[in-house]
Length: 113
Length: 109
Image (cartoon, rainbow over all chains, first blue to last red; front, side, top):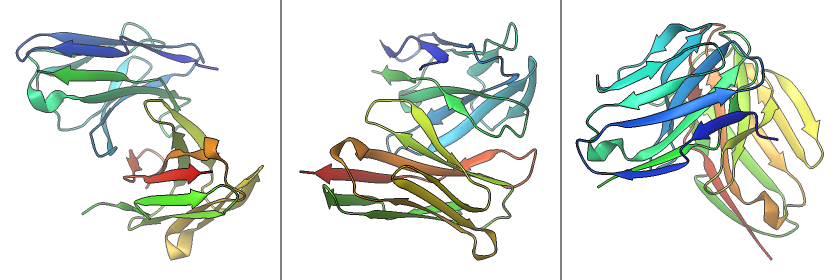
């Protein structure tokens, strides 16, 4: 049963446009993450938040910015998308920073043309 | 270099055969987790197994810390087992989760 909800699931846009992905979890977790999965299926963490506080901010381009209104929501905004931003963006959540188990959303596939 | 190496990269089995997926890591281990991802789908946690052996149905995970490896065994594979299996480890309690590149499993009739 899905408990991490991502929207939209699929988005096609042109280079230079702005895109936002939303994520909400109903598990009562206090930590949320954004991962990027490239065409080779490799997952790399981008950001993580614990109780609305940014705790991990990997080296990602500055056009990426996370936004958290409360511990159940973590959105990802991309200003001025580039072709290399085409990927699947996965949101996840867990209890605690060291989180025993991560629960993932269905993913948001971005295609930049 | 990559901290987590998975092998094989891909595996094709006939239904009923067993599969052995490997995950080797070069760092210290705080936790190890296996995920399953069906094509176009989300990741589903299969095992949280920082050490020892755990079994769930046809799936068995064994993590040997001192040998820096974890394995996922699938017995009597079914077509619905097809998908990508990823291992992920955390090197310390507050460390980031590092994913392997995955093993793509295809089970054919």
